[in-house]
Amino acid sequence: MIAVDVQPAEYLRLLGYPRDFVPAGRASELAEWARRWYAANGRPWVYEREAASFDLSGGAVRLDGETFSSRRLHATLEEAGAHGVVLVAVSAGQEAEEYAQQLWREEKPDEYFFLEVYASAVVEHLVTTTGARLCVWAEEHRMAVLPHYSPGYSSWDIGEQGRLLELFGTCLPGALQVLPSGGLSPKKSLLAVFGLTRHVDRVQRLTDLMPCENCSFSPCQFRRAPYRRSRSGLAELPVIPQWERPSYSVNPKALKRWAAERLTLERRPDGTIDARFRYDGTTCTNMGRPLAFDYFVKLGRREEGYFIREQRCAPAPGDSGHTQMCQYLADPAPLMESISREKPLLGQPLDDVLTWRRASTGTGCYCDPASREHKWGLALETIHYALHQGTDQ
Image (cartoon, rainbow, N blue to C red; front, side, top):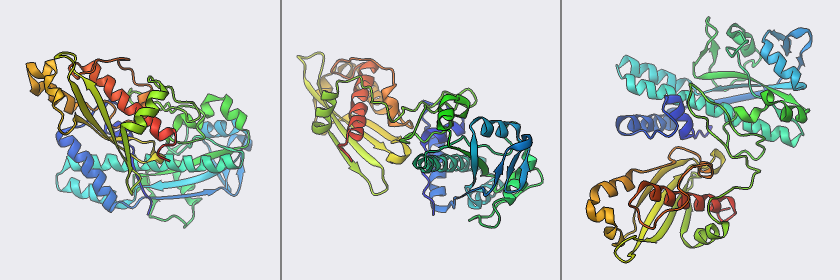
């Protein structure tokens, strides 16, 4: 059974939400329901093999005796000096599709939509992690893997999908067939070709051939460029290359001290991490009364980029200093609701704290939004420092 952990930001992107949007109410319930249903019932699978023969002569791409007419694929492989390709098939499985159809028949369009989108996110996740795994293998053999290409993409007739499927023979771990239209059944599936080249210098020099710009696998240690994909006008999802030294807004010596004194990290059996950070400050009035707030952050697994799954901030147990803040004294309910509601990087990778534009300094209290953002930045940068400087290894 393949473990699938779809990145929240990718799921939200496919749902059509803006990057910083945080679903609430019914939408949040449906998104979480689809994730839970698939975890319990989905049967995703992946199959990959290197083509036994490969040829680019005559302006066509020939794989194991079959000829394909994609000009774009041919040009990409030729420019990179490719010497071979890896054939990949992925599928979210037929279980999700069958249940989605049942939901439609039962006149449950909302559940149908969220499950359909989640299955699409599963396919993207499988392709991304497969590409990352191939990159590791290629790097060990002094090669590079090119961005994948599939029938139905620009300049590759989807009508050639049937012949590509035939190259996989009868070895696929799940059911897959090509419809008369050229589409696949189950529809949440994909056939892809990944080119292989020993000319790594060409891949680094030609941005059109840079696989990293099409790959959202943020924790990859072989990343050569940030992820640049953007769809339907939505904001890009920046990735901090792993070989760069993190640039913090806070002095690393302070982060080191806070990581040791104010932060606790608890790694769960499923690879997720619970982080707790204590902030100690003072009010700006009433002679600077001391106050303490606790920050809780739940992170996804390391190999998936430490995506932020949960965030919350609240006064530490027993703290009374927060009741002396001027905005609290004026009207406590709006202030405390704002503190509870604000989750600035929810659904994004932890790396995004390094590029998050926020106030560089803040008062010790929580009365204004800029000050609260500043403190969230301190908490998240401390967590990032701890996870990337070996304190949780």
